[in-house]
Image (cartoon, rainbow, N blue to C red):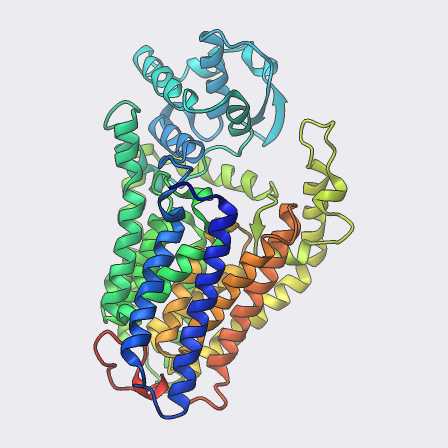
Length: 523
């Protein structure tokens, strides 16, 4: 069955609103003292919504209309990791052009020079093939040519040109250690690439299972509903790709392990998530503040949290050591240089408080695009960078304010480590600019509904707002700035609900009933 993107978006909106209404219905019944009223009906509806939400992520089976493999994204992560010893972070597109020249494709096109992220004409790099081939043995060059033909052959020439204007391969050395090992298990074929890309759905399924194990099936259903209807991270962006959601499994899994009182392993999980994508490390602020809160309250360092940080340190030593063994110590130096370059290149689909503060109504992409230039939005990138510089004092002040609010929320929640870890994830919307598809991290915040059920309602309504904003403007910067504003506002409301729970009962300290997302006293 073929389902167009517009139809999927409207179905996702309906699912989000239905989920929020269902959770709100349960809240109303609980306040009326009828928490068990129509429980079987409500549970059945929630289960159906969770399954439909998960199906919505996969475009109800239509995938990439209808291909499973995301060729664009997989090209970067498969080829970038498999040939990392030869390509590094800067030669993927250069060597692609050399292969094209050897295959007789000599038309001039524009590509991105990954040394500086500037766009250049291909004739400026085609004249020196040895700048690429000198890094390959003859056998590896033959293999590279064969694998390149696989990915090139799956695209139209117009789309292939667009692929070579993306921003290259930017994975961490820790991600590369596994990616390189897996990609080198054989030549690029539809069978091999499909098998590798199926690892992502396995990670996502494992994440939902872990949530159900730690928080009950109801929270898992809401998490699946949010993830599957998240327009910022829809299948279009990274679905059917090579290990693009592994970090989310480790991030969410760390909260689940804290909930089940396995802090050392939880620390290892959050360390792995951080070493895969860097930005998950910002979520560690929550447990750090919990450690401070417990010390101030009890005049002792919490042993569980100390084991959590010890697990993180141990995992970091092992994983960094493994990455050095695979790619050498210089890989981290090269990664740092590449990351600095990448962070200096503004993207129209970035989200977060920095993107919101840098926005100026008179310097939008719509106003500054110059189609005659090699990089049509270069002027917008410069204006965005200037906006960030101007907003820096306000940004710092707001980061401090959110950190204080997070601390108050953690204190009011009893400095429970798993709650602190869940709430800390929201700092990713505050402290850093991320491309839109990483906003699936809100799955980790959904877990906080175990203690405050209203959190699930807020996040589903936020997602419904995102779905409507998708139609706000076809210009990415305006759309994603609006979505950023809503994300930051919802995170603030969640923290306020924990920090000042006026009118709400404190969370029960007894264990909830089986498969229940929240104690009956708060449902």
